[in-house]
Every structure is written in structure tokens, then in C-alpha cells.
Image (tube, rainbow, N blue to C red; front, side):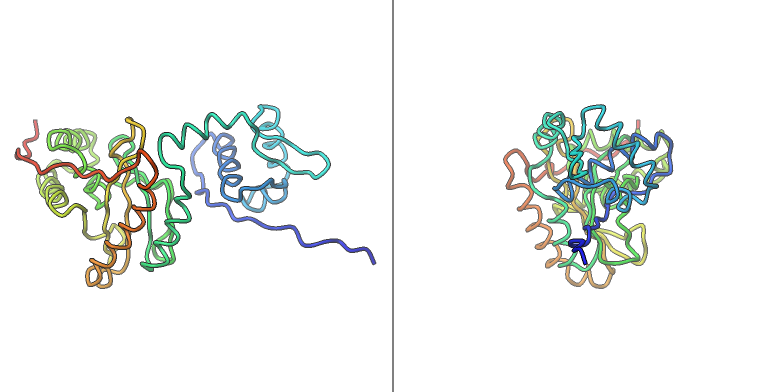
Length: 277
């Protein structure tokens, strides 16, 4: 009887589900993210399984990406790999952010804190989770989730900005109804407390959980000071072990900010009161 060889390896995608339009563009990015995660060539069947897509749709998608020069196809082994066309894009991302495996680092922090570890960035008038890891089914790794500046992650980001700029950001968010106008003064009080402490803390949107967040800088001027590392877990546990949690978070940041050009990002203490214009 012929040996059929070892079973084909199956991969899991970390891509969030898409509910908006332009699905083809999103799916192409999901393919590139999958390749970046597994760091090896993949077959169409593996992509279809990982992204939960119909094989015919995946075949058409991969063919389009090959014809566009983004993927290389090996017709003998039936494998797809990224093409050199992506190297400039990839190197620019490293220049903007960091060159280390942040997903693995977050996974380690998640395992140590038994909660959800995340990285959020400012995007317009709110914050967006762009990476995360969780060991708690009640705390989903909601990549692509937008949350307001009034959250702990938002407070940490605002605390990394000078007072006048933070006030301006809060006022603009209120104008666009991302924050109730009557909540602005209280939010700025929380931002000032975060500056004093060097981190933000408070109730999570997912109650009864508690969050701690620390801002840090990327390399690129456009996204400098807009990145936040956060941990969310059971309130009693996080509060009672706050010092230990902060220590683990700073260990995580040390692993990230050891990359040249990446650093902590807390602004100096404020001097002016919040006065919406």
C-alpha cells in the first residue's frame, strides 16, 4: 500500500471577521497576515481552512494576487509564498513600528496575567485594537474593535500627549459625539491621574473586569505616542496584583522598546485646567 505521507498541516488565522464591504481587499490582506504568521509557504486548501472560505473563492483570490505580483506560485508543490514586491512595504512597517514578534510577546503576557493583552492605536477620534491575545473566553481578542478615548486605553494615549493637545483631542471627539460633552472634564481628570502614575487604570468596557494601560512610542513621527499596551482581567485579581501586573507589562514593553527607535511615551505633568473652547 502506497504511503500517502504525513497529513497536511492546518493553520489558524488571527484575522478578524469582516462585516463591511470591499471583502476582496480585506481577504487579500488576511492572506498576507496568515503568511506572516506561519512564516512558510501555504497551499490553497490551507488558506481556505484558515480563513473559512470556499475553495473556489480562495483559488480565484490567490490567482489574482499572483497576477498582481504579490504572491509567487510553485506549480509543482502547489505552494504560495510572498513575492519580493512586498519587501519595501514590510521594511517600511518595521521602520514605523518594531522589528520583533509582538504577537508572541503579547501571548506570553496574556499567559502570565491570565487575562487579555492588547495593543491599541489612535485612529481618528477613537482608539482601535490592532493586536491582542487572550486566555479568557469572556474577553475576546476583538481586533478591529474601536473604543472611545474615555476607556483606559484612551486615557493612557491622552496622558502621553501634552495637556493642550490632549484637551484639543477630547474636545474634537466630543464634537463628533464620540464622548459626551459633560464627560470631558472628568476624562481630563483621569488623564492627569494617569500622567501622575505613569499609566492608566480603571473599569473595562467588559464588566466586571479591570484594565491597566501604558503608552509607548513607535519609530515613525506619524504614529509616535499613539500606541498603547493594555491588560484586562478580573477586577479583584488585577487590583490586588497591580504591582505584579505592571511589572509584567513593563517586562513586555522592555522587549518591544529594546528595538532602536521605540520607547516609552509619557508626557510631563499638566499645568492648565481643561477648558473646552
